[in-house]
Length: 429
Image 1 (cartoon, rainbow, N blue to C red):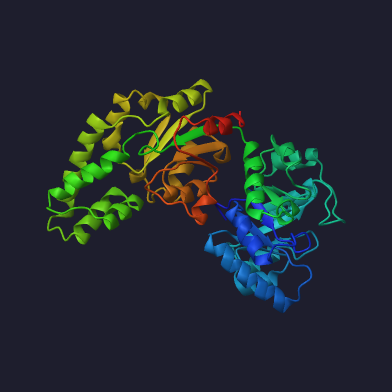
Image 2 (image 1 turned 135 degrees about the vertical axis):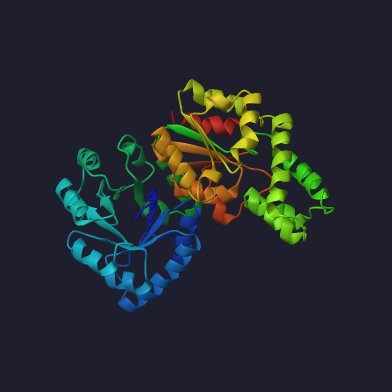
C-alpha cells in the first residue's frame, strides 16, 4: 500500500499502561499526540474479547483516518476488516497471508537479521519491523539487532523500515543517519501520565533525525499579506449583484477553491448570471488586486533568505491560479527564490490531499520527511501529512484548530519572524 506514514507507530500494551489510563483513551491520546499508525497487540485475551476490543480500537483509529494493524491474529484482522496484520518469523507465511487478505491490506513482518528481512521483502511484505534494537521489558526473549545490521538492511531493502525494541527518548538520536521510516513505540508512550504530550515529544525527536532538505510555502496568509483583501474584494464583487456576504458564506469559502466559492455564491445568493461570466469578473478583479495592492507577510524575506543562505531548495504550493500571483511575486522581488511553483489547478485534488506536495518532493529530489511546509490553512494539514512532511502552521483567524487538526501540527507560529520558528529549524541543521 502507498502513502502509509509509519513515523510514529504506536503499539498497544496493557502491562505497561499507566495506572491512571483507560485502555481505549490511551489509543486515542496516542493518536492525538501524533501517532500515525496503531498496532493492536493482545497476547492474553481470548478470541471473543480480542474481537470486541479490536472493533472499538478500529472505530477510534478510523475516526482520525489512522490505519489499524492487528498483531499476529489473522482471524481477528479479517473479522474486523483491519487495515493490516503484523506477523513474526514463526507465523503463517506471508505469501499465504497475502492470498487470504488481498493486495490492499498491509502486511508487516518482524525481522532481526538481513536474511529474514530479505526473505520478507521477496515474499511481498509491505514493511519491516526490525529489532529488537535494545533490551526491553516488553519482550524479554527477543534477539538483538545491531545498528550495523540495521544499516545493511536499510541499504539493501527498499520497503519501509520501522525500528522496535527499547525505542525511547534516549535511543531515538542513534537512528539519525539511517533514514528509517518509523519508530515502533510502546512503553515510552504507554507508561506516561500524559500520553498526548509523550507522543508529541517522541514525534518531535523523530523529526529531529531529518535535517531540512526542502521548504514549501503557501501564499495567502503565509508569504503574502493577502488575507485582508479577500474580504474587501468579496464585498466589492458581490455588490455587483446587490448582495452582501454574510457570516456563513465568508466562513464556508475558506475551505473551497475559487470556482467552488463562486459557484456557492451563485447558488446561495440566487445570482442570475452564467458561472463562467461570474468567474471572469472575479478573476479580473483578483489579478488587478494582487498586482497592485498585495505585499509580503511579516518575516517573508527573513525566512526566504534563511533557506537561501543554507542552499535549501524552495517551492510554492498554492490554491491560487498562477495568473493571479506571478506578477505579484515579481513585484515583491521574491519569484527567483523558488525552484518550482505549483498551483492546485494543475492537480486533480486540492491541498487536503498530498498530490501537490509529493510532486514537489519528486521535482526537487528531496526526502519528504526532511521537508517543511508553511501553511495557514488547517485544511491543508491533511495533505501535508499524507505526503509525510513536517508542518508549520501560521495561526490565523480564518481557520479553527481542533483536536483532530492539532495532532497534525509540528510547529505553530503567528508569523515568520518568530524566534520559535528559528529555534525549531536550527535544531535540524
